[in-house]
Image (cartoon, rainbow, N blue to C red; front, side, top):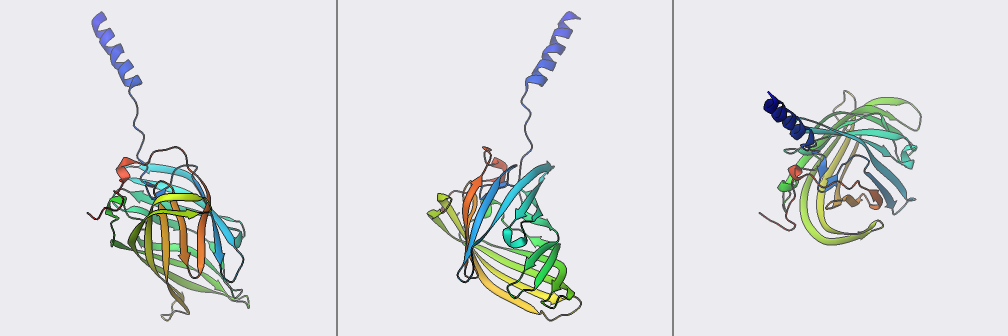
Length: 257
């Protein structure tokens, strides 16, 4: 009996002293490490207007099974310094996807404004790192519902579709932005199409098509972007000292296989 008690106690001690493996954070992508308390702050400069900035701050990360949900806040003076919640969903097979964005108010240059809520989405913002080889492309589509308010002040219901086709175009050894010099930079070219349609009508009332260049540094995240004669640069960031999840994967820089 005594020997059995000793064995039982030893078993409890072994269980108690055994390390508990933390749940994998599938949003902790090597090119966009969405970690608890991570913060990125950017400055956007346009040729014909004053500079403006925005901040993306991670509020929390929760993993259930093979999916991670990350809640973040998007804040910009251009949007009235209000914090807009963005919800990302991530997995080892799909990478990072935006799944929730509600009631964001976007002022337009002519004095009108659009208020949008994400209704449906497909594709992915950023696929798993092991898929990212030169020439690899992927789609991403966002369908919003909301309202458009003209300068006359009368709102009308609208649908907005954003279609993005992304392709990894090249690798850069390094790039310098206000936040510093970063090595191992992935350059993603994006064909962007935006259409705004009055609800229940087929013909868009506004369309926009352009190319966006997106620069992402390993272990840091997005550091620069060029779109519609605007340049957005990372000016500061804060990341907790958490290693990139091995389950999310890591590519060999410059690998084509």
